[in-house]
Amino acid sequence: MKKLNILFCVFAAYSLHAQIISGTVISKNENKPIAYVKVGVEKENAGTVSDEKGNFTIDLSRFNPSQKIRIEVPGYELYSETVQNFRKQNQRQVFLNEKVKTIKEVNIKVKKLVDKNWGVNTKTKSVIYSVNPQFRKEDFLGETALEFNASKRSKIKNINLNIASYVSDKPVVMRYSVYTEKNGFPDQNILDEEITVELTQDMIKDGTYTMDVNDRNIWVQGKFFIGIQFLKEFDGMVKISAALFRTGFIRKFYGDWQKMTLAAPAINIDVKVDKSAKNTRDETAALGDDLEGLVSDVSQYNIESGNSIYGKNDALGAYLPLKDTRLYYEIYGEGEPLFLLHGNSGSIKDFYQQIPVLSGKFKIIAIDTRGQGKSIDTSEKSFTYKQFADDVKALADKLELKKINIAGWSDGGITGLEFALKYPENCNKVIAIGANAFPEGVDERLVSHMKNQLLVLDIENKPEKFNERRLVEIMLNEPHLSKKDLSKIKSPVLVIAGDRDVIKQEHTEMIAKQIPNAELKIYKDATHMIPFENADELNKDIVEFLGK
Image (tube, rainbow, N blue to C red; front, side, top):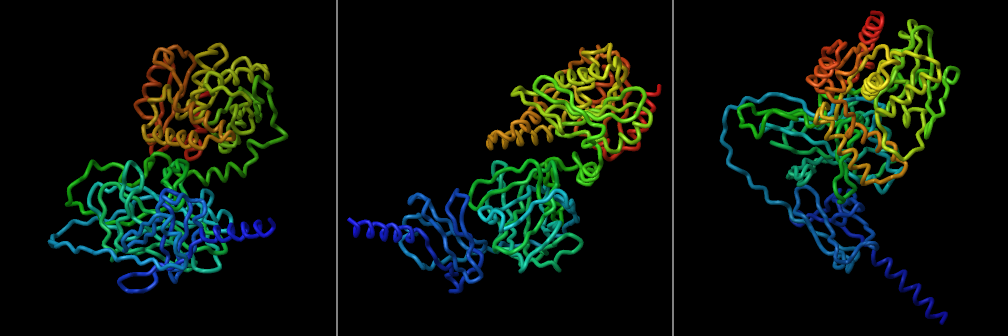
């Protein structure tokens, strides 16, 4: 029996070893090893990349024998074989055939080529995409991509990558790919040969690494994707700048592509656009980003607000216990009461440029809306703006304030309108900044972005993200203020929005028109981020409006 156990252990060890296959990838035409070839299993999130000499080792122990091994690199034909057959030979040589390049007849014509730059240009150091092989090795060989859309035939000159920081003990090896689009995701790599670079610190100029691909003759039209993948482990970390409220794409090895709805890597391209070519569609989304020009990069303001005392002032902060929540607030200054209500997923600190100015003239009561900032919500109910308005009323009663003013940004502006409608006897004046009356008043691109964000949250199904899910849902499902409701608001209201706001301008104008005592101001060259980007003008307008 003892001998049998020993033999069983030996057999088990041999079987496990048989699942770990090593080999070398070789060019059949040139009989030379091929470096940095992807070796993995179709539709799976794990794989490996061959080294500089074409050598690889892959563990196939957890895969079904009928699954397909996939070995590919630009410039060569795809190699595919079942896992069962691939396991039969260790230390094997895998030969790849070079792709046959068909050179089409070229008719030389005078073209009007116009230089353009498309993509994400931010160089922020606060919102980043980190590449750290030592932290999550299973994710290291993943790939990230950004979508572009060329309405006319265009040639890619340079691929630019904005790098926030670079620390490495050796050159960092990465590969670029250019993909076609299918069903909204990257599909086939169109490159005839690989674009691989060994990146060093001195190749990064002013926070950007520029890869010159002009001689590669890469022409694109319609939707396409630029992808980047890191191929070789290194000691250190590379941080790529990323833009909030942009959509990127990511996959783990040969796994399915997934949308990243919160941020996208700072990839941008220099192109020459053939203006004489025929359009595939109207000039839309050419910058390759669904929210381009709609939401600006406010990372610097987030840093500044985070460094301020507001939202974490223990000396002036307090909690109001309510059903299912502890409502956090801070009070500054003396005089006529002015409640400051932040936007979705924000907090008191977002008013770091308003509180110092306004508290010199008013008694400022700044609130963290329930479930946000330092306010905790323990219920399992969906959030509503009427509920938020009830919370404001409860705090006003606690502070024995019979009539209040409200300045609300985005969700806070909606709450202000709900308060004015429900508690007219307690409302003096309202300043609504970037508020909407119903969901259709929001730009469709942002609505699509939020739907994608909700889809990701549903797929993840993480209990710790329940609150985040509620905050997305309230923006998609609310408010429901009809024109008739707006006409019932008797308090004077200053309606403010930017001419590049996520709230449609005609919708903002409708709100101001329906409220009997409303004034309208559209800020020129302004986005939804007015309290950040137009702070001085906003402070002045609030003081003047409340002083009338």
